[in-house]
Image 1 (cartoon, rainbow, N blue to C red):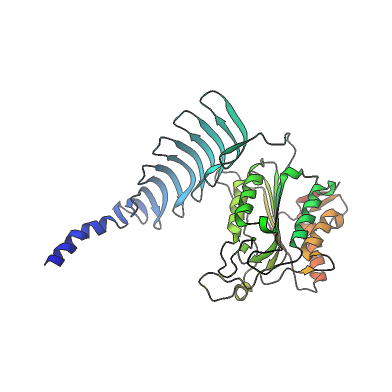
Image 2 (image 1 turned 45 degrees about the vertical axis):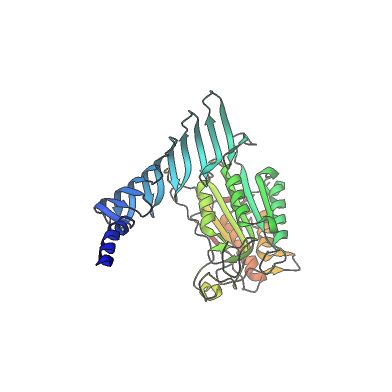
Length: 400
């Protein structure tokens, strides 16, 4: 009897700690749902997922706005228990762009990444002063180092030959150096060195790569171009930074993270180039299947399709140029002292890809030149892949 009485006393407590729909329709409709953490959602549901409403946090914070996959996504207002308030755009749970109102009267308007001020923005101080320019991890960096309306290019280049805990490659750092040198040259557009971040070997950790993309891509305006170049090991859905855990397949630089960095940037022209050797022996955590066994049916390419931004503007162009198909290796060659893809990529950009000699290289011309050259040079063992929505005739590069 005592045991039964104890169970009856504990029953209400166990129920109160479990997630439950308190009222309404929490599947498809309007309903109130309480979570074990103490958070409470009051709003619209579709297929048991939050769509639009109010999320009250146990710590006193309160979010009003839209959701996607149960995360804050789209326009919304986040009110902090401290009295601070953010009004703007969220993507996958994180602030992207908007206004932050401080209880002391300060106000920030601009870009965010990782829920910190990152990119272009202005802080309006309660003293009447303003700090307008570029921000990195909540720290003001001053005004951007460029001016005018001409297109600027911002680049992150990664080359990993010497891996921390994985088999080394030979020429990936040389590939990265060569690509940087081309961009610095008049033929490559004379990109200012401060607009290029080069990460080699031990510098190219996952954290450093993501930080570099936040910094460089955050500087770009709508008329600008951003480029991400990677040379190193690759796997299905990811690239392998210096500190990848090859046994578990963890600490990868996932393609979706690059996609997220691209989407955050205001640039209208976004390019991802990868000479990524296929790392067939990396295993997924918790799986006995070798990735190489799964790769035959999957193209190793980043799904960076041009898609509508949360603020209603559409990306003008997103191009992904990969060195090989998903089931192929990307080869290096000692005679060239480079990856074969990068070698022909740079040769093509210097003018060899200009098929009609009009001093302009289109995406289609560059792909045709590189694809034909790589396929022929490797006797059909390697075939580059270009993914770009209706960009075949669009200019990739203007020759000097």
